[in-house]
Length: 183
Image (tube, rainbow, N blue to C red):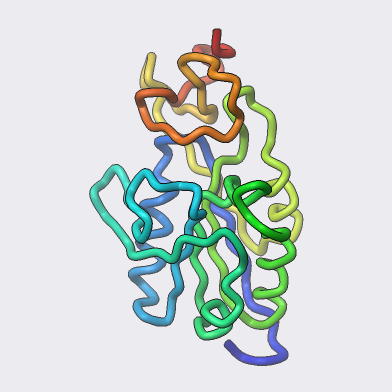
């Protein structure tokens, strides 16, 4: 990090199955040991110390439930997966403020996350990060019904939980034509 120089904030969003984690893993690999990869401690789907993609790529990650000050300051590049999960009660503090502080300190930060929940409501964390992002890349998945471009995550069954870990057992990508609320 260069002191006194603002870093960069890149946001990669989209529905589930869009390739967000693969893009983050590629970014981390391009920066090697200068990158610190983080994920929410709440997300244990790939184990405590990994992020993994459906294309079978992986990256070692630091599972966090609060901002890792010393580790973050030691790396000029920060890569954060599943930022929508970094809210109370799964995260102590305000992840947006923490990220903006790192960028102000000169870090180049790339973040991945769902832009909307399964009811097509935007995640507040993503909305706030979008406001200060230098670049926002919105990815699309393929609709599980018709294979058309899909901007939405659909939940197969309503479990009553907004932040719920799952994969294709619980969620599907859907196009405008085939998205429906869960029942």
